[in-house]
Length: 98
Image (cartoon, rainbow, N blue to C red):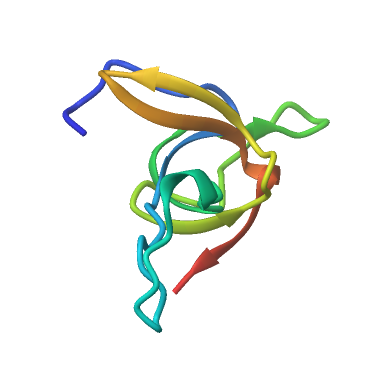
């Protein structure tokens, strides 16, 4: 993705889904209609963080470039610069891969 003018606010992150395999290990080709949307992605932008009760800025645990797992229904789908992306809160992320 080329440099975007979009910067998420607070504890939100922008995620690009990682495409799932179109063929199984056994060589069976999976048609597009049978594929589920992947629950794995790469973070491409992060917000500045959330504020705690005292008003202090708490930075996010994730950063741009991290590969993550997230819930099936997490985030809001958006189109930025012609690319389908997700915007979600850091709390919707289950973990960092690798």
